[in-house]
Image (cartoon, rainbow, N blue to C red):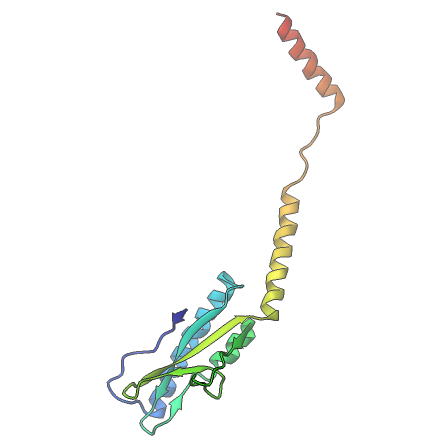
Length: 158
């Protein structure tokens, strides 16, 4: 569970144009974060918050590209359903106090089939490289073994 960037502290409600600039920055940071998580922890589900910007005209602006980008990385959105939960049209949870300029969209994503296939390929590659490392040691010829044995026997007689 983590909270992604909410952007800079705001002292007033932003205009739609100001919010759009904040969203571009937040979407890039969020995408970079999920790329790293997909590489480092590819089997781990992620619960996080994304910013929801409330604007002067009363709109709520979401990170519109974030969920699509997560799906392209191999994640699938999971939505908790309960009649008391405040879900959005995007099947996510929304949390915001009335006086907040930036609310929070709570999402849960799990590794999907695409990600599982990537993991499977990596495991196969690791297995193949491990097999090539564990080759048999070269064996000595019978003649070399006999000479070594005779040499040891000779040194014991002395």
